[in-house]
Image 1 (cartoon, rainbow, N blue to C red):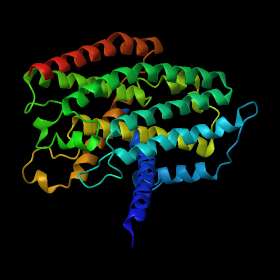
Image 2: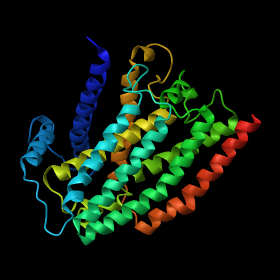
Image 3: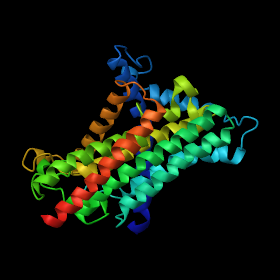
Image 4: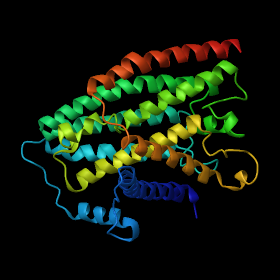
Length: 338
């Protein structure tokens, strides 16, 4: 049997299952985590500990009729949820989950993921514009201004990683960090100069803040500010239109966590390169790291209040962009000198 055909099919099915499970049970984790953080219980009725609640919600969404309100752009209204889901799912192709688990090695995988992220931003713009709802349109314009502002420091920070590793291949970036946490880009104590070891934690903080903003998570969820804009760009959506937007949001969170893990946390590398840590498979280390990052996302959402839109933009244009540019120049200087 020719495995060249079946391998991409199996990867596609695996990614679809991974996306569905994450969308369902990250929602459950968020609701349960929010309950405990706010001294509530969270889902508990459907199944033990409410574990079947995501399944019940999924069945409910799929059984509802997809309504297209009057006065909307019917084609764009239907296309927007698909635009929110497909780019995030496609990004999984370029992510190396371990040394042997990657759908397709790509030399420019970093560039591919950022290109697909810009398409996901277009989904919010198209969905808000097509809805013909004033709250949705305000949400769409907020989202575009927010994503433009935070993509700049994020890309500048990624350039520092590309300069250090001399590659845009995510697999090679992860391989160059193997050998224990002291080789990871978050604090490269070994193999880099002391000034670079000081600079890289700053790069990680900038990248993490931008990841939270890029995925429209609180305190940067100005596109979905329910206290101001009802549900933002999703106001007119119901049924699986709303469901696809939610799946795309959670999958974007997973992609952001995967990218953070590969760029700064050594990818699938063990915390310490000695037994018993090396007995754990690389894919387990990778998943452990991304879910710790996702839990941090959840903790931030239910801990800090939502900021104001002008403060959100000022943080990027007046603070993060200047710091990231200085960081880039210092990285170039230390690479040249040391």
